[in-house]
Image 1 (cartoon, rainbow, N blue to C red):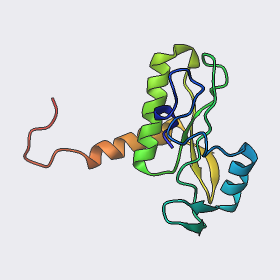
Image 2 (image 1 turned 45 degrees about the horizontal axis):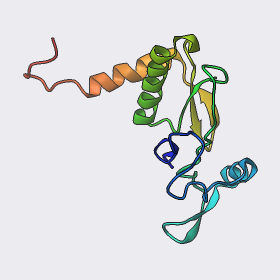
Image 3 (image 1 turned 90 degrees about the horizontal axis):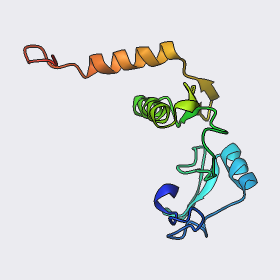
Image 4 (image 1 turned 60 degrees about the horizontal axis):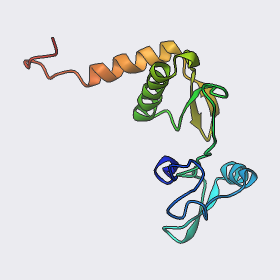
Length: 139
């Protein structure tokens, strides 16, 4: 987990045991499909839940290969994070354009999270975070 914190500045050498934790892509895909895995911390096999970590660390050159932003679930925080990442990438790499946002949920797979749904999410989030009545709001 947190591969970006566990890689040497050379971009190749994994640190803190991450190299030993690598598995082939096929194994990662099979584990995701079966939703059963060995939980090292608990020392037992877990079933019927998504893997807590399943990162694929790969190298990219510029914007080549960037196809979208993926949210781990439909939770508000995951969706807002994905939207924030898209905005950050758009500013840092203008050539990437407006990447689509996708939601991944084990039961329903991947689905698009379109602009209308994003606007609604932000609007509802801001309404729920509005200042209590009688207090000063934002100018």
